[in-house]
Each structure stands twice: as structure tokens, then as C-alpha cells.
Length: 211
Image (cartoon, rainbow, N blue to C red):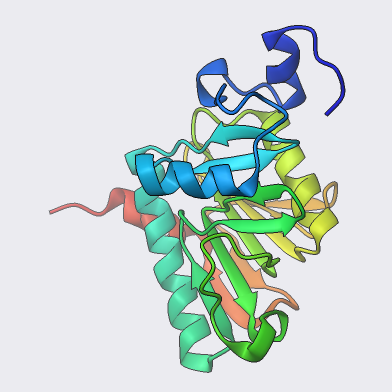
């Protein structure tokens, strides 16, 4: 990590995240994957690891409900075809040495999994094919830009960013190549999930469901 003079420098280096999400113990720049595991085990707090810095993952109820609905849709498609496995909002991946990210949803093809079996490690060194992020109020544009760069640099092939406020889904096939889908469009899995297709409006319908 390059030298940072102030807390503001640190926040900006991480994409403009608020200071309350940055753990100060271990000291920024010295944290390891073991610290990610220890905090999760003893405090129940999920942290990503970026350049030796622990950044807490924050997700509201609305975003969690939407992520659960999308996860169920993907899970059904993947499992009925035995394509691989789907993880949820606590699925933690060491994408590259000392880089830990926690997508809200991820799909990993069996071809990427050693031995073709689900990993047992709490933070496996594994790169999913698809990473899905449901945007929360605490997620800044800068933070999401850095996440996309990390995802694609590590080998993720497809990223979906789901925005509950605008009810749109941005589909990225590279850090800078994106198209925005509205509720009038169809979300498809491209080459990552051939045959997967769902109306975007159906994804957001969960937010309108009531008694």
C-alpha cells in the first residue's frame, strides 16, 4: 500500500467509503486473510481485504431481500443443470493473494473448482465466473469501480450490479464495458450461463410483494 497521510486519503484510496467501515485493528496495511476469518468467527462481521486493509461489508434489509430473491432464481437454474454452485451475501473469496472480496451473489462453474467439489475453506482461493452486487446506500461509485476492476483482473467473466432505487441492472463484461437494463428488458447469462434469461421486472417484483 502506498503511503497515505490522512484518514481521508485512506477512504479515498478505497473508493470513498465512509471511515466507519474501515477497521483500525489490525492497523491498515497489515491485515491478512486470517484476520478476515477471525473477525467473522468471533464477531460475526464480514470484512473484505484490500491492500492489507479490512473494510466491513454493509447491507440493508431491502438489499438483502432482493439479493435473496435473485439468489433463488440463479440457484434453481444452476442446480437443476448441475453447472456448479451459487453463494450468497456471506460468500467470501480470496480472488488473488491477499485480496478478499464478498460478492452479494456469485456463481462458480465446476470447471474452476479443484476436484469438482465445493470448497470447505472459509475463504477459498477461488474466482467465481459471475459476481453480483446489490447496491446499498453505503456503496460509492468509486468503491464499485474498484470492485469491478478487482473482479475482472482476477478472472471473473461477468458482473451484474443491481440498483434497487432505479430498478436497473448494469451488466459488465469488462470494467468499462456495460449496458444498463430496465424493467422492460431481459437479463441473460451470456456465455457464462447459456440459456439463462429472466425479465428484469421479475427480479424487482420481490420488492412489491405484499400480503
